[in-house]
Image (tube, rainbow, N blue to C red; front, side, top):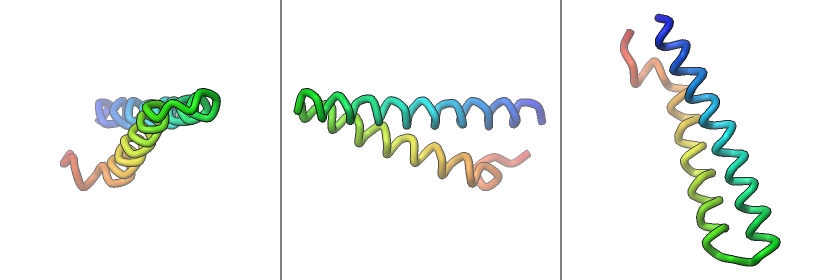
Length: 64
C-alpha cells in the first residue's frame, strides 16, 4: 500500500514538472520563434495530460 502512495507522489511530481517544462518551452518559443520549441511544449503538455488521466484513474490501471 505504501508503494501506491509513493507512486501517486511520483506521478504528481512528473505532472507538475511536465507542465512547468511545457510553459518554459512555450515562453522560449515566443522569444525565439523556433518551431521545435513549440513542438516540444505541445508534446510535454500532452504527456502531462496523459499522466494526469492516469493518476485520476489509477485504480482502473492497478489492482491492489
